[in-house]
Image 1: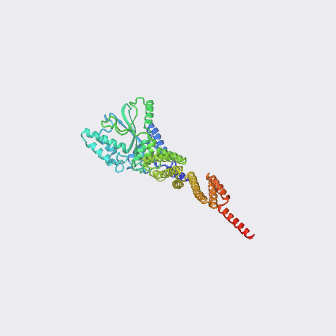
Image 2 (image 1 turned 45 degrees about the vertical axis):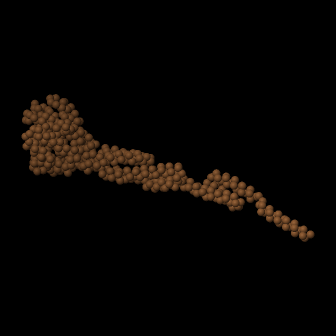
Image 3 (image 1 turned 180 degrees about the vertical axis):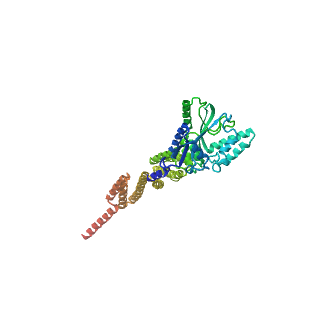
Length: 475
């Protein structure tokens, strides 16, 4: 069992949440909008819950603007930003078709030409992606509406996958008697070594409880601004639903902390996911089954854990399971098979073959550390050894018994008696009923030995006759 304990410890290499921060992020949010400040704190709590060290600063809008758009893409520690929460408000009067009706807007905000890393452009995320640039260029140049729509659809799919910003919600509201479209989102600085990883950005987006935020927004707006035109809705891309090329097939990132953990793990961070917990539970069940000698069940459970580690891409845990745990269970199954075969052969009286099977089983159980199974197998081997010992004794006794009968038939009663007595002693040592048969032959032999011999009588007659003749002559 010590081997199993060691394996269990080996497999528990993923640190529990809170043992050590996965990475650090500095988050800024304008202090101009109370509701945004409220939901920012809500999201920051979600980030911290998975093990991210987060510092949140509420700062004036001027500072947000300077850090995001005037710092040449620098990080927060260098007076730039890591993550920023803010939103856009677009007036319907200014743009009747609302947001992003042509390619110039997305060119200014998302094209590499306007990356903050290169110029003080509006691409504060420093999102530099050749596929993105190519689609934006096509959108700006294309005149055919069908092709233009297709480029827009492709661009939204790429954006959704890349997540340079994480859309939260959009809503139509009336502000100062003006109908507006508001769009709330999180901007990531891709110059940050952590946020440069797409999997991390996707994970953070899955930590945003969008529906909860929308519900809270709608309750708040209803109380504070009863003239709100429509409720807030989840959004997946920074494109207004009224846009002619809005992609309805793209769904917002669902709030899913478990999936977020998986993505963080795949990005290289030692976060304990739900699948890790399930895999560890399966391995614990497997160990319990193994301890109860349910080896096939143990193997089945270990294989289920293996599949979870494969889904996670957890090569270290997978190596431990496939390299140590599963082979152990397979070896135990092999030993159990040998034990069963040996037992069956023993029951059929094939003792030598049975013993060989059991000796193999014993050695394998020893390698598995299954001392109770070793003892069980040793007991069967001992029983076979005892059977073989008795068989050998009986064979020797049978030989002596047959020799006794041969000597008896030749009237060599002394030799016969010796054979029968020796045979009886051997039969009695193994509890054979033939010991009684030997007694019968011993008695029969002794009876024969007590009878006068004809030769002796004849000799006596001759001696007697000779004595009489010599006596007459003497007279």
